[in-house]
Length: 94
Image (cartoon, rainbow, N blue to C red; front, side, top):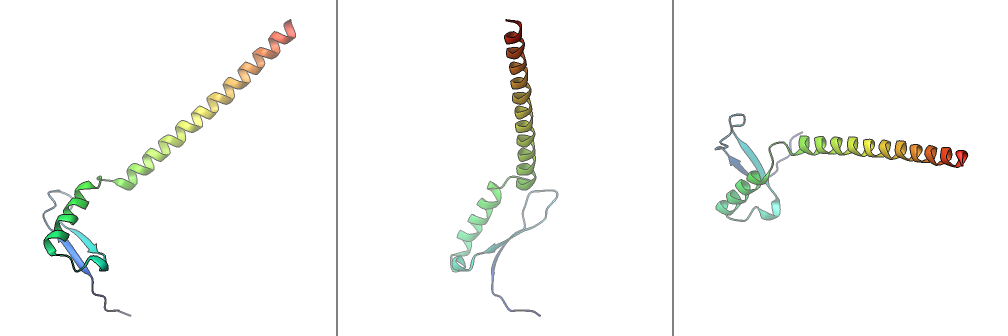
């Protein structure tokens, strides 16, 4: 079943990228009455502010931070056990 929906779309054909030939941006309905030039400028600004791979970067950073946290926790646990063992040995000797 098809529904008729009127949507404003900005199409950027000059991507200056060898992988992508076109970018399509859907305008929110409440801003559809703004001038075409204003919407085009905003679309270009939006695309320019986006990183190349925002989702992959976030996942990679997140995984890296999780690994660092695991190493820190393991180091603290091993360090704590070592200190407790050293104290127990010193108390036993004295």
